[in-house]
Length: 245
Length: 255
Image (cartoon, rainbow over all chains, first blue to last red):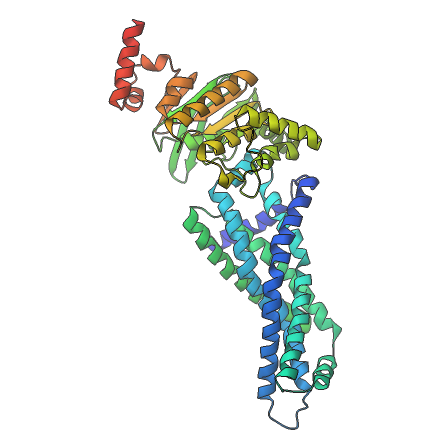
């Protein structure tokens, strides 16, 4: 019953987020600030993780191909497919649920605890529009982060392949060009947009509707990470079933 | 003026407000007092429209709030200034940005006009040099004064304060009380203060509403509170020996 109530409240929150818009001059500043906090602030960790995970995917693929009949370029092919289809859009989103999601929940939750949200409401401001909408808009740039993750993942794979002695540069490049289907990139970006929406709204929901004090802000951040990850995994399955099968 | 009539508010099976009726007058500092759990904060949040209520009416200048359209409610809210117990300043903004916030949201003033107004109200609350400080760098008393500046910057008709003296030393508390009373007189606004600070009650309580168990148990002023025979009020207000002595002296002086 509580789950149903929360799901209902979540959808009402989304509707309310688009009502009574905040003055554009203020909204513009909020969006730019959130782009800085959520997108630019995440580039470092995304680049670091993508590069090294790309390398690990390449090494593990190369080590598991011991049949001489399987061509060497398959290492590059497998790395590309893994990175574009799953690693960059899905697993990077789960990492972002921890980084960006916790930030959103704790910042909105702290505003709730310290009555800053009440202050907005008393002034007649739609606090959901003021707080959540800019996050939603700034996360529309999330595919930009994921495209960097794709590029660096494949680049990391290439570095590991060539400098680790698992194959030649020519084989790797042949692999990443083999049977390239542009729809796979479209599929990845469709998923990315959906995940961006979840990353903006689920942590905001947990922060906005939390009750209690500082301890509960921490608990809400953990709960938001769990539910954002669950929603990403479930929707990943549904989208894959709908778009690729 | 704010008129409250037969206000009822429950949380589940617990009835917190059990039919409160009163009037908060313009140009006066109206105090809501009572023990913890008496329903003061819930009452204040109902007045502010932060809580819905089951029964009764709240009228701002004769307009019943619950019967207004969303736009009309927003217009009334834009005329409300609120000082929260914890100040509720926006952490990510400087003090000047906090004070300028209502102007940016609700007016079409130019930047220089807004800056002039911010300078004026920060001077008014005796914080002429605090513009670029962050709220976390300000003391409790300074934060309260910034909250008052933010509340009055857009020339509100109504000023609500939730325990404005909590956590302050007695001297700073008196400064805040006097500031609120001066602003109320100066701008002729309707001020409603939720407090259990007896100094505030005695100093600035031009009208006092005493709540007990969700009911209005007594209504009067800082003059009449000395003479009341209402046992609930005397138990609460004169719970300390010091205030008992003050009361006795006041009655002796005025007899």
